[in-house]
Image (cartoon, rainbow, N blue to C red):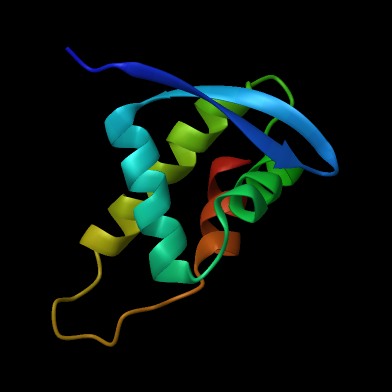
Length: 94
């Protein structure tokens, strides 16, 4: 059974907590490493553009699913597209 982990994050000059499964935190860190962005900065971007009726953890999960779907749908031999964070956030906020 996946373990939920609560972490304190600093976004937009305030501290808050977010609860995700261990594997979700790992996936989020993998995205951050691929895109060369800090976890807090990425979550800031997600929060800034998310649908107001959804919570931050839900929006972050939605972002991760869409990010990896985009990566899975790229042709194998194509050059990897980096920094697609903004396009992914825009997609989930509509």
